Amino acid sequence: MKKFPLTVIIANYNSGIFLKKCINSINNCTKVPSEIIIVDDKSTDNSLKFAKILKKKNSNIKIICKKKNEGAAKARHVALKKIKNKIISYIDADDFVENGALFQAYKKLIKTKSDICLFKLYSYKDGNSAIHYANPVKKKLTGKEATEETLGKWNIHFSGVFRKDLFISAYNSLNIKRNLFNADELIIRLFFKNSQKIVTTNKKYFYRFHKLSTTNKTSLTYHRDNSRKLEELISYLWVIKFAKNEYNHLLYPCVRWGISLSYKIWKQRKIISSTKTKIALTRFLNAISKEVSLFTFYKNYPLHFFIFLYIKLNLLINNG
Image (cartoon, rainbow, N blue to C red; front, side, top):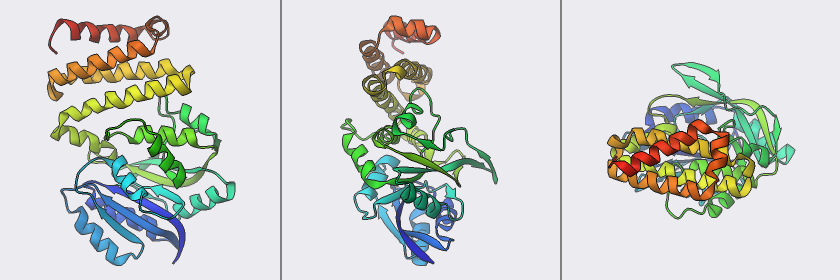
């Protein structure tokens, strides 16, 4: 078993039962990453126990234990500060990769002098897999093309092998002072924007779809602190401003998505908190009004414009 200079960062929150399969998919190969960092985001299950057992059997595993549950983006950032390898990969603790996928992606990234090499993404549920809709159509993309696929839609995934320095740059340039549980979506857009060349490989990454998946961990957090769902409004306002400043032709599709998000949150106001929802939605919709031409928005998306008015009026005439 030979090692190559790649660090895999595994953000884990209560995914202990899946860790073994994740690690085995990485290490049961002839060539393995020189470093695997499991960052435990203050799990409440047996994750740490399983991680320590795996560490004893695998010399390339390190464990970082966070003292506070802050979300995957923060967990990955903690690990990012501690690694020396220039090429990294993120794998969620409940996901896994095809045998040899990491080395093949690493080789292609180096050979093509790219910033990113994306896997072929598959959804995995109950032992069955299917190609995920978010695989890019092109085999090669510019950073601009990739970023555009994230605005007003998600037609591209972010599972692959990457240059570490671009991630550090993305974190450093994120102009939001507070930590957001869904900050991943903002980091991804900035990483794509900073990239010059993106390639793909046919090697597979399996995203495990289940109610406890890492992607849904934020939703689980909402059950403990429902107000955190309102953080989506903060991050999505960032997306709207980002589109306006960098990709203006996609501004209104982003606003449409923002209004759809507002409506979903409005419908859940009793679960979250009527008062908090009213304050957050009022601020969000007022901010949108300042960022865009409502007349242009109406011409492009009349249905979403009337949803915008509906929420605004309800916020004015009742207490949520």
